[in-house]
Image (cartoon, rainbow, N blue to C red; front, top):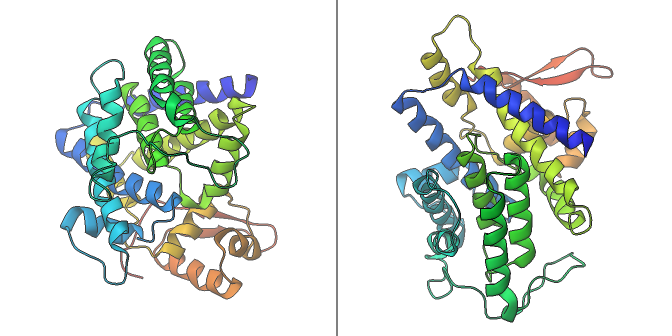
Amino acid sequence: MADLQKKFSQADENNQKLSAYRPLPPETLKSLREYYRVGLTYSSNALEGNSLTESETKVVIEDGLTIEGKPLRDHYEAVGHARAYDYIYNITEKEGLTEEDILSLHRLFYQQIDAEKAGHYRNVKVYISGSRYAVAAVSKIPAEMQKLLKWYNDNEKKLHPVELAATLHQRFVFIHPFVDGNGRVARLLMNLALLRNGYTIAIIPAILRHEYIYSLETAHTRPEVFTDFIADRVIATQLDLLRLMRDENDTVNDTVNDTVKRLDTSHLSKTEQAVLDAISMHPDYSYEQLATACSVSRPTIARTVKSLQAYNRIRRIGSDKTGHWEVINEVKLEP
């Protein structure tokens, strides 16, 4: 728990540093919100197997276009998640969490997929693939959800924001109240809790899917493991923003607007995004380790690395044997 407290303190310190850039002008807040609308929608859906790339997700939710060759359901998931994301901003300023808040999130996400099940608790037994633990029985879902709501409302002002957000996510998933979409709703609830406490959106990239699932499974007996995982994601998001917002040659507002542009990875392919995520998390990875982490061949990694270097997204520091990768800020949209 001592390590967790250090991470909570680091998150608090990062948040204070980010506060120096506030208040942000309305247009900058709008840009950041739109950026995370795409980023969270893409990453959250990708964790569940959605085939849309980040650029395709952006086109679907912002332009209403259909991507040829991609399943219709994947489009519905993107549009639904974006609508649910918008909803969390409608309830960010209020205190407490209600059953209707949660049902509304699921309804907005699932409406186009299955209108009859959207916003309703499941009435069938479900199993979590790969898990040794059972979720709540159908008959116990309403009572378990009331317990969850009471726990949240009792602890909203008592727990550290990161612990509150992680535990809310964890407890909700263990109940698994809906027939589908539980992971998406859990991550939205987690980010709602963070936003209410002045934190930024925390994104879990698809490259970390195995670590994410492992930490959730382990949390049945050691809940601090999942909290630790989420703390790392919160801190990583904060550091990304801080690194990009610091520019002594710019005004604060110009810096933040530039940040949104630099953070935009919608032009990257799915493989490029996966490699960028892997390098961000593991700057010491070799070509072989990147290939394993991204489930592609070494030649594909070599081509992708060249592409990312052409985009000015990464650079190699030192030799191939003893050096490391570094993610850099400036982005060229054409290689």
